[in-house]
Length: 353
Image 1 (cartoon, one colour):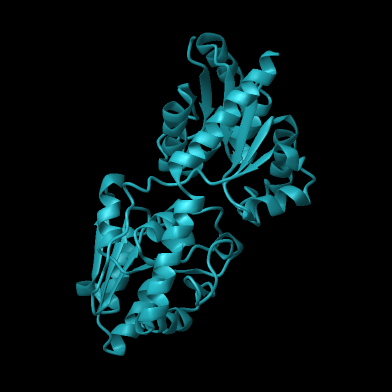
Image 2 (cartoon, rainbow, N blue to C red; image 1 turned 90 degrees about the vertical axis):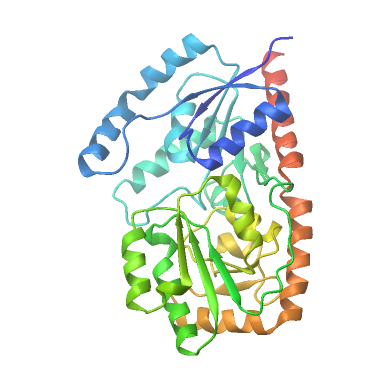
């Protein structure tokens, strides 16, 4: 029996996408080919070129389909690659909503246009992925046929992200989100400056790279905490579990969130989660039960809750055990990706009959 082939539309270098594709190869025995936009989205001129490339991309995708002869097409983001999958003329189609709504940023002039193409993508898709319950809210609001929606995260590798005991007598915090302004690293640094003023000992590890790296280093120096803050820069994903296992508190302060694999990874490694109080995090975290929910940009609250978390050892230890169990039951990559791969085979069987 020949392997079934899937065409993946999306940024194939993203960790998220790699997890998805590798899971389909491993648990569904699929062959994967990819197509993505080639123009980077980093300058005004490039953005214009990218829009132009996007306009002509259906021709390029149809050519790829003719050459590669895939059995199925999958795509990430309902407002970009998802729409391209919807107009490719191919079935079955599985599309994934990446953010809480994918209609982002809020004030964008393209929003009415994005709503139209998203609606079309939802209508044409045979299967829609919601990586978590928060994503179904916007889908229901726009009248998506919820029978087509599969609500399950891709999950994380629990053998790699394994628990460890950290008996440190100080706060050893870690941040693993990309260094972009929407992740509010500056607020995190300012909260730790408050801890420093209160003479509370800590170390803070900021993992990753991004446009804000230098300005965040400058801010740490201005706040006089640079000797307590470690900027690792970009690291291979294989080194991440070790860093999480050496930490006792995980911090993530995004202003918007779909489903965060980073949060699951931290929970799997026994890090206590302190995260922003937004719908994407409220799905998993209950305040002062299995983590903390912090108002966006409220640095005083963040500082106070960090102190509370650290002082309430028993509460923190109970949360850590509860979170590991939760991840094992709900975000196990081996189980979840098998469910997703089986679903694709089911769609292919239906389309062949």
